[in-house]
Image 1 (tube, rainbow, N blue to C red):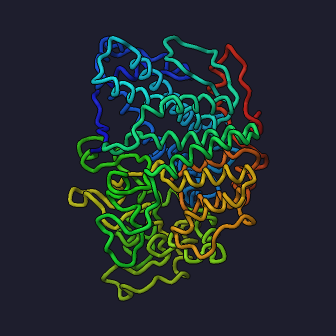
Image 2 (cartoon, rainbow, N blue to C red):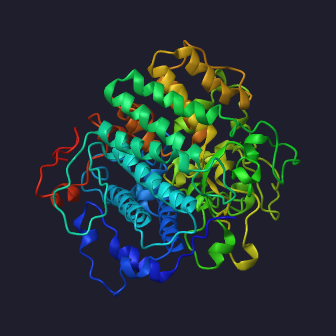
Image 3 (cartoon, rainbow, N blue to C red):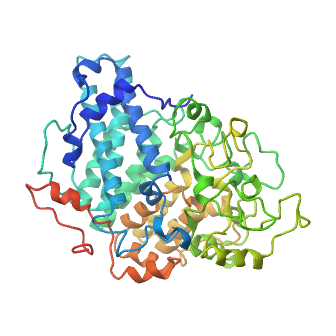
Length: 558
């Protein structure tokens, strides 16, 4: 059973009036109803509906590419993902104009995270309210644990992205202008404390796909302890990161999928990596033992009115091939009706797949990254023949570079739903991984590496590379942070929040990687400084007028 994301309008009205964050705008809404927390929330079921708004908000922030902040959260402007030049007006790569303290999309991301925290604080307070009846004590504890999970996750990710921000640990009922900045490590520790407090109240597995399980909390414990270790150069924190990652990796619940699986497992010419991204194959209850947490997408929910229940990857991530004479650029064999709002950089398109690094890697198989285009118009005499690269290159020039690029099959399908209902080949309704076991393995590898345990780091990376049938394995002499980041790009392209990964790694890693792998000169030329956190939105600094907030290094005066 999937989480039902279609919520009651009355409940949403109350939530909109009772949630808040550090920006005063969220506290100054004019009430449109007399409904209050006291007269709406009386049962645990109603509190659980508030939780569902958090699941949906997290899904929107991580999965929605319809908006600018969603594209940033997918990695736009990093070392792995950019925009074609004909989409430059949608870019997030120019450090003189689009990445500044006044960038609207950064303010939106910050606001979304603190709205999540506000909702979580409200839900936590409701679970502590003796006037509210819950189905059982176990149910109450699970609801509280999920709320604390989202509070921890939002705080930790706010620290990763924005550095020194505020800890908000209780519902806000009055307008405040005095939220204080906390150190990054302190915010990570707050998130860690929340997560450690709920482990016993989270189930190991669940039959309701999309709900939080213990492994998700352990994963973020590993990630946030890794953050503490980076900030404080603390081997003890790295040990904790290794401990929690190991509980997931070696705990007997999760393991990598190594054999074909799912309803399409018998199709020739494919492999287990391809299976991972087919419809109905993403959840643990579907038999996918490397799935730890997923966002839920469902065509029936979409038809019933939940407009957010679609994953718009084919539309935004597929190349534009309609301009090629003899190619119908909206069909399954070209990934659907792509408009190329986002495209891989040279790193993810070619560099990490060099045979000297990735010989034999099934993730680069033609079934998973389609680099060959065929004439598919049955009225064209060239039907079924390969479109020459020279023809694609010429068309690319005509579209100002970047419209044609390989089709990453993990981001599309060859079996689109809803066509008989008038849907176009723009959306998919498969569930989206939030946490998959390989990411946990790579967290442990990074913690080992930062402790100087290079061979153990290589051993972890090779768990993943062996599953991918790579002929070339990591060694203690080849593993470094760049190697881990490259492996994350091979395994987790578009799945991970790349900005979170780059910025939490500290030092000059983010700016170094972007300067090296940015596709276009305007991005490289505008990045004239180093940074390891986004600028704090200027609106946040201005509204906390009763205290002094310091802007992050590199962004003062921009």
